[in-house]
Image (cartoon, rainbow, N blue to C red):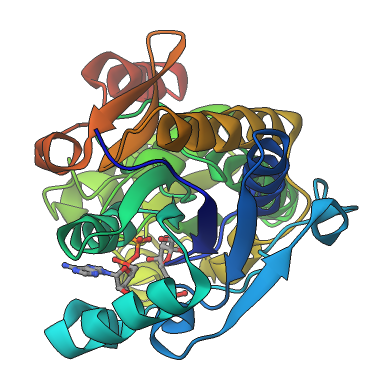
Length: 324
Ligand code: ADP
Ligand code: F6P
């Protein structure tokens, strides 16, 4: 059991995700309601290294639940991976009396949380990433907004693709994971979905599929390509040369990370934020908040980082069945 917590810090780390602000709000307001002091740590782990820490009260999180991005800013901070960086972070925690930190981010950020625990600071992780690539949880904050943003953009590309009878390759984010591509592929009725977890680089099969579709009277051919595969522009050039069908590539990019969070992202972020603070208040540390089988639960960070997850085979098969 850790010593009683009096002051907590909250930071956002890694790529930002819509709903992070709702999580920050929940952390701050739950902590205040439990009688704790709250510090906002700016720019991810950089804030701990460079002593960029602000006091937070109820008002500091007013009017942010509906906003994308993160009011605390975020960063990828390589210095925190070093012992020297962690020593500076410990000094900052001591200076501000921070005895527990809530880290909102992805797997990399949770490795940082584990290091905080190693140097004597309690830490709890909240899954915040548009990629949905955290194995211990069925939900990550930001995914729902990102797939809805991408889906709406792809609908628009579909319109013009049909008018011009073109083939369109749309590249979506997800780092090495194909969840955004799979969800948009199904939701947008794409003819092909290329996932890093499944794609075997067999471009000829893809080309044959496009030609067969055209022979059956298809007016467009939408290919959702995951960032983990990439090379959409080159792929478009090769497909056009092989099929004679005009082919265009669109890389959706950072628009997928911005915008007002959906209801689902706000709701999950709010519950997860409160849950994280309650874990700290209960003397827990080195835990990750997760959503599993309809419940909010928590896992040991080491166990969480060991877990693996994969694309659901049935969902992947449905996508090709429905777009025939
Ligand atoms: P995400 O959290 O979205 O997976 P990153 O992998 O970029 O994003 O990690 C975010 C930050 O977490 C890194 O920039 C670094 O500050 C910290 N971090 C990542 N890996 C480690 C590690 N092994 N030890 C300590 N900190 C880490
Ligand atoms: O993790 C979220 C994410 O948007 C990934 O989908 C993408 O690979 C990466 O971040 C991009 O990171 P950066 O903002 O550093 O370019």
